[in-house]
Image (cartoon, rainbow, N blue to C red):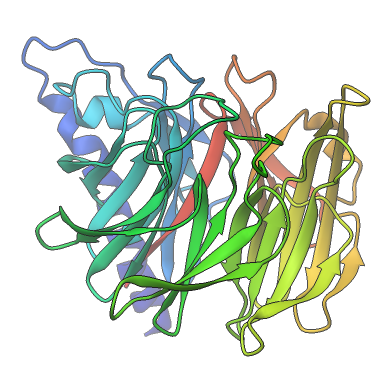
Length: 391
């Protein structure tokens, strides 16, 4: 009986990846960039998940955002699938893929400089619609709506930038924007917990100007009224914000690239304030169970050099468990870590490498003990993961 169930689930997964390839036969007279299949050699059954999408940012100004898909059961990594599935879309995905998410049967890709959210069928990656949001950044979902942060103004470094940012509310049934809530300057990642939206404001375009420069607060929005209720003071130049299993928030600061270093902060949600500072750079991180997997790529205008680090933090004790996610020395192969995800079932760790930001990057898979399992070539600046649930 168990073997029969397993065979059925494998069949469903094969059907899913077949859908990803089915549309390549309809070409008409349109020139299409074909996808590429790469085998990792590690097929496995992952309960509850078919695989994951990986959004490659692409270098700004070149319309090179691309989409890849990895199927756990077949161990097939399909590279650059969007262009093949959507041959008549001008400029393909667009300029700078900044975030990706799944809600229901739809896949959403936030394309920053192209000022749009691409909405696709999650199984086929055929475009359903695009939602126009200026300088859009990150996306989250709640009760039939998508919430998208926006810098609102153009992409420009300007100490006198005056355009305040907002969170757009999008109806996922009609795919129309229905409301906006003003927050701080250049809002980045957002998180939703208990009918509140928490937004990390950066002020990244403004820097240290004469009027205060970087933002240093998390905006708290009441979902029911869709109004900003208050702000929580954290630190300069915020970027990431994620909730742990208890609904408390982990926020990253990029610092000022000079005397103020990048740091990871813990917000006790009940108290509504920062209670702990973790002394590590936190460029990006993924929370799995009670562990926070984090890498830091910290640049200093004083030393004109990069410092790269990897750590695991216990979200219960708020202590650093280890400063070595990768334990076999292969971290030296990674030039610029740029994305991270942890498999919730077997605890494999995925880390992307942007390399020199121009040539194709790489995707690495490590075991839960930090030993390299496989690696492959991804797209240009591989960055953002989303798991595809099987139910």
